[in-house]
Length: 88
Image 1 (cartoon, rainbow, N blue to C red):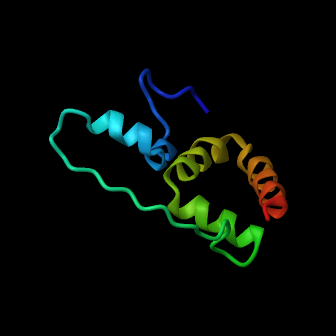
Image 2 (cartoon, rainbow, N blue to C red; image 1 turned 60 degrees about the horizontal axis):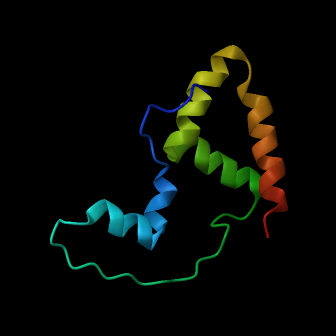
C-alpha cells in the first residue's frame, strides 16, 4: 500500500484520552470518558474475522481493492487469518 498522506493519524488514536483531549482542546467542550472492556474477537473464527474486515473495515477494504488486481490479496488475507488465530 502507498504511504498515508502527510498528517495522517490512525483512527485507533481516538481510543486515547490524551489524543482526544488534544484534538478538541479549545473547543469549549466538556469531555467525559468511560473505560470499558470488550472481547478482542467479535467473531467465531479467524476466517470469519477477516471476512468481516475485508467487507466492512475501511483500511482492509481499500487494501483488498488495491492488492487483488495485482494478485497479492490472497497472500495478505492468509497472513491476516494466521495472525488472528494467535489472538487470545
